[in-house]
Structures are given as structure tokens and as C-alpha cells.
Figure 1 (cartoon, one colour):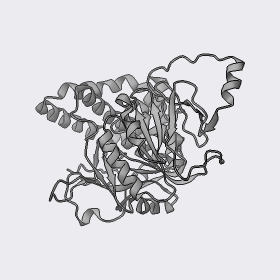
Figure 2 (figure 1 turned 120 degrees about the vertical axis):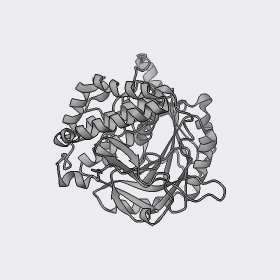
Figure 3 (figure 1 turned 60 degrees about the vertical axis):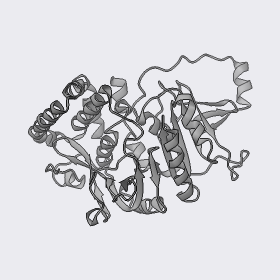
Figure 4 (figure 1 turned 90 degrees about the vertical axis):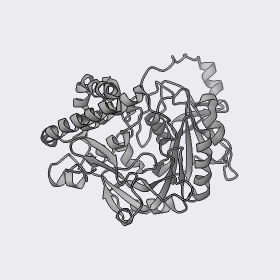
Length: 412
């Protein structure tokens, strides 16, 4: 557990242990070296690329080194503009990372809109998160120029997203759910926000995919966070109106479609792989603020989202994970004095949520998820010490927290 949550691990190591690595003799190494080239820290050959897989520890640094455990492969679909004999690819303005597991139909629709509307020179990466029968890779393989990162088994959103960030060459990286559809000009509007060097992330206006003759509803106009420990989406399920049509700073950006400055996300430790999925973007938003960055909401950048279409009906384990991760975020990230002042609010939040879960018949997963956090106290202490080293954010109280745009009142 301490290895998973260690503050120096950026991101945290993937759960589990990878397969043993067979030692090769010198003859094998020399033969293989003739057909191998290094691509972004991976060893690529005609038969595939050794790299990411469950059990791999991939340090996300500006110049990442090759993973030492686990296996995976990167497959790049041929593009008319590719020159296999040319020099190593140059840095790009934008990389789009799309993790996908089991909805090849949605992935095709997503890629169709991305390839139609992307700016010239955009790198598009699909991370096949152990999809059954390689369905995600098969769907992505039909689009020329799309790079495919294959994980041997399902590892969850955080591992898949970090795998894509690892091979991204863009100064800006957008995370896209496979159940999203982008619109014309969505990327250009968001990229303009990074002209300010203090902006570490840009949140587009995410709209619920409308049915026939349905009015536009907001899925997310950026993320919000209440001091008592409640994370949410700004404007969720509200009709699109003037209040959400102005650019402004917000607490965080939903990972369903957020743009990140790659340098900033690496410095903040990327997505916490121990979370697997859910509230990982809230946790990352806190770390970006600790590092001195801001998050900007850009309504001119618009993305449609088939909300939760990639996951289906929640199961008990999923409900426990959601409860656990939300509790983790509160204890891991709030500055010390603010944390103490927030405890009465937090206990009131827990009581209110427990009452609601009891009415819904899901009280036990809620309680079990919260109690799991008690086994992580030592790891959380290490994490909090690491936060203080991140930079100018430093968690200063008062005006510092105001700049993080944390809500001091609970707004329904």
C-alpha cells in the first residue's frame, strides 16, 4: 500500500505484480537489437512493443525511462504522412488520449468526430484497457494515423490515462472518454486558454448528448468542491443558459474531456492509479492547485457526452470505490488548518449522505468504502508531506484557498 501511495511515485504504481521477466543471453539481445528502436521510452519492434501492463511501474517524467516490468504493445496505424525511416517525431501542440474498454461502437463515433475536427498535427492515442477480444484496438485500427496503446488486462481509467500521457508528445494533452463527441473548434478554443502560463488545465463545456427535440443540458461546466468534502460538476443537469457561457476560473476539470498542460500534470503526479476510477480528476485538481496552477473553464470549447454509457449499472464494488475515493480526496488534499476547521462540516456531510444511502438501499457499500480509508493513514501522511514540496501553492490558508475556488457553502 505504501508503494502504491508513495509521494515520489508519479504516478502511483499500478496494482499487482507483473509477470516475471526472463533473462536473455547476449546472442538474443544482439539479434533483437537489430529490429528494435526506442519510441517514447518503449522498445518497439516488428512484433510489438514491450511496455505497459498491469504490474508495470511507469514514472511519468518529462523524459520517461522504459518500464522494467509488465508487457504491452504500441501499434501505430499507417498514415500517408508517416516516414518510417525518418527522425524521431517532434513535439506536437496537442495530444488526445482516449482510454477505452468495452464500447467499440461509442469509440468509433468518438474517433470520427475527433478526426474530423482535430487541429492539424494533433496526435491521437487510443488506450485499449484490456478490451474483450481487443475490440477497442480493432475499432481504432480503422482510423489512419491513430496510435494504439494496448494493456494486457483491464487496469482502470487511471492506469489507462497515464499510459496515454506517457507516450503523448503534445505540450497539451486532452483526456477524452470514449463516449464523447467533439465539435468543430473545440480544441482551438481550449488551447487559447494555455496562453496564460499559470493555467494548468482547461475545462470545456460538456453537454449531455440530447435526444430528438431535447433542450441542451449541461453535464459539466468544470468541477466544484465543497469544503465539507463534496465533489460535483458545475451546472450538472441544468439547462444551458447565460450563467455558463462566460469564461472563468473553476476548481477543477472533468477527466471526461479535460485539457492539461503536460508539464503540469507530470509535476502534479498524473492520475492516482490506486483510485482506479472516479474522483481521480478531483484529486488531481487539488494537486494542480498545490503546484500553483489554475483551472480555466472555456464555454467556447464544447463536447457532447453520453453520460455513464461506458460503465452501465453501478455494482456494489463500484459503489464502495466511489465512497472510498471521495473520502480519500478530503483527507489527502486539504491544507492542515483548513482540514481541522472543516471536520464539523465533513461529519455533517457524512451523516447526510449515510441517511440518503440508507434510503436508497446502498448504506453498506457507502460505509465500507469510507472505512477502507482508515487503512491508508500512513500513506496519506506521506502524500501530504509530498504536497508541501510541490511549489508555490503550498496550501496557504485564506486568500490561497480562495484562489483554488473551493466552495465554503454547500450549493445544491
